[in-house]
Picture 1 (cartoon, rainbow, N blue to C red):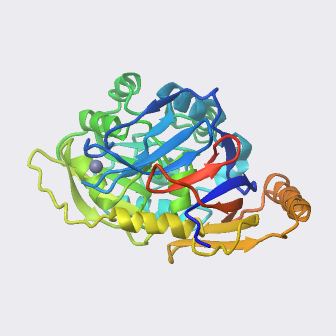
Picture 2 (cartoon, rainbow, N blue to C red):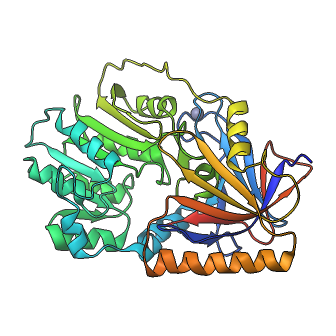
Length: 397
Ligand SMILES: [Zn+2]
């Protein structure tokens, strides 16, 4: 039997993620054009329930992928301000431990981005701005390497105040790209470096970030940006992880930065899953744009693969385990539960209890995610659909 969709019944709590029910309380809006190049988006996949459709769009000009239906700006900003990360707040002791170079607990991609910036030989008297400064590790690393004027911008209230309290840095609480933040940053400008590590894919309006940056930097100043690489990001992250509003590849990033007179000077991406791009503000733009992007067919194949659609033999409930691997793409493993519905549900309940205990009580990290799914065949309206029984729900942090 051939299935073209799955119905997601439930998902297990895993470390670092919460579950967001997409109910009527969330105000939504439509995105029709590519965030990077403004070309018209085409829906490639949709998360669906009887009452809700959340479309994911694809730009066939630059390869950008992102939500076409999403919560409004106010909802997103409120979420980051008050709810983001609240289940996983770090202690002051952890924050201090986490800034020790070269290893410590610094995330590999963040360390690579910092080291790439250090190699640029920027005048250390010029300002550095960390866009989305989180728990302040990189700000502290910049200070340790001799930079004197360091400022952070952070939309999460608890993170902004913790960094100020623990390390003494100025952290502007707000949305980079807004007039208010731009005006406050003017007293620190011009910035020799704008640094942004795994934040850009979360922001409501990436173009406003680059536009605002261009007003705070001078010709020759650098922008170091690191984001997940769409080519290597698990397709279930792209579809189910709402926090990543955008999925960029090299081409979409370069087109977006070029629009505001930033040229790509170095591509330091060293894994399949992470982009690390260095841009420089210029008045004489030279454009590369020779990067490949995925075709629609290949994206659809990745979605099918990530949903395990080639693996189901019957309409039983299955667990679908998937994980982001450094290499190897959209790994997913479907395992059938018992034919007997009662036994299958009991089995799931036990799994839920264990995952709750592991992730929320023991705070054990898991690299994988598990969904309870049922394979289905549907007359589809969109190229690929993912169905939900009741309300659509998604991953969030
Ligand atoms: Zn585009």
